[in-house]
Length: 278
Image (cartoon, rainbow, N blue to C red; front, side):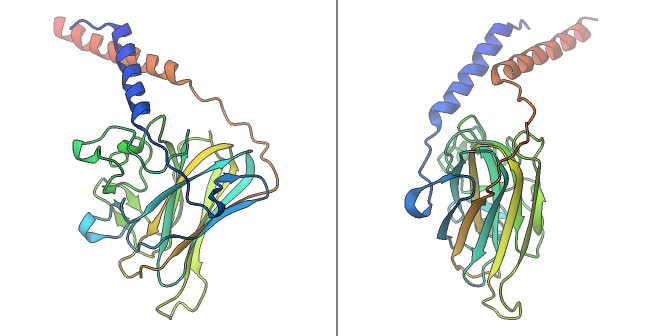
């Protein structure tokens, strides 16, 4: 087999261009239609979502995220902050949960990547709501105009799930980031704001991201328990007044990464050819 590295490079870049063309960013759902978060300020939506199974917990969907019941939104952090807190609260007996993702643009759940043909028709019906960018079940949302890294998730349900893509959705707050490019740590909490013995107890789920870097982020929000009601979930995001002094490591430029991938692929094929000829 003859391998032309320049052709590999061109094909890879063409695929990336196609991915960019498919994206259609949507407006964020925030009070005042303002999705810019500045130091010492907050943005909110008092009734962002009301699904009790949008994030996880639907047995008919094998605990996958329910794209048509949960909801995506996005925000732009104008300056790197010492901390940013994302807070989701139910107005009654719902179990709020959400994931937060780093993006390059105002991403709101459009298909920008590649997955099975049935999942290339817009916002996915069922997907991996906690998957790392590029994982099975979230490849459709991964790309230059979509998710580039999953940073963390939190679920206020006491139940633990494994979805059909192998994604583990445990109760509580979880840091799933793979590097320190966009933050230095993710922590959080869950709880109730009333008497837990009451059926209409209000619950909350929060994540705090330390040294969050300036740029675009997306959030997917929904309920996570079949026992929850379809009560409204509010969303509030606040930034510390103090700026972050953290200097993240430099990311590898995309063209260089593509070239390294092409070189490695060619090398692998060359090794295989040598073994066959030996």
